[in-house]
Image (cartoon, rainbow, N blue to C red; front, side, top):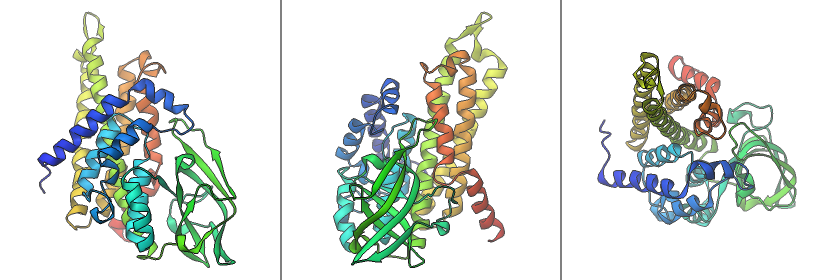
Length: 371
């Protein structure tokens, strides 16, 4: 396994880091937590102009056709600045599902616009009080007058109010199906879900929402495509967590060097130095796991277990790094006027979204010991 970045990958990393540094700071993050759309349109447009929104979209459909390592590089940088953009739901999970299981018309109609950042499509698959397992999806769909009618609800849908369409997982005649539902469709009601991370999450209620039958996916088997797309998404999420943890470590280290107590920087005390050293070791170890999963996927090797472990471990490391970072900053770390709490709040959010710890552990155990 060779994980040295190529010149192109190094340039990609530097481009995204520079873009985020120029267009997004912590004060803007605070403002975006109160923004109706919940995401930075300036960063989003810049990502579209540089081709980053098309990183996983094939060149034949208007993207740049890069691999999962490149996607991980992008998300490590987005994680460092906590960029509130719909890249993972739209450009990773939705784009991959459309590419793998969508019809030819859906691929040609949606992927170029997603790759350009001109359209946002977000998956709606989790349901109130239901399991994270796609096999437990219960949202009802039925045929009526040549159209497909949806009745039920989805929850924890990111950026639903800014999306052009929802990629809905439902049951039609008892079978799992996916279909694209324009967000302006009659009968859709969006309910904001306030959360500790200040991220834009919504419940979507479908009150007899009718869509054209051509919006139904008819490509590869949905369950198989879903598993592939979700495991790729886990790698991107893990990379984002590692980026956030690394940035938190940098902030804590800098503060430990400048904060003086008893006549010397607090970083000179072993209790603080050990925290920082342990965090650095953990972050670097999980970073290699994340990129190993991405490398395995790009080279056609089995990567599902690696992806599950990467998401599980990266989420835990991000959580621990932010806890220690807040503590090292002392009372300042808990203040809403300081930056550590921004990372602390998002660390738990990252752990819970797109398969939480308990579900990941069950999936990993099933892979090791058999279902």
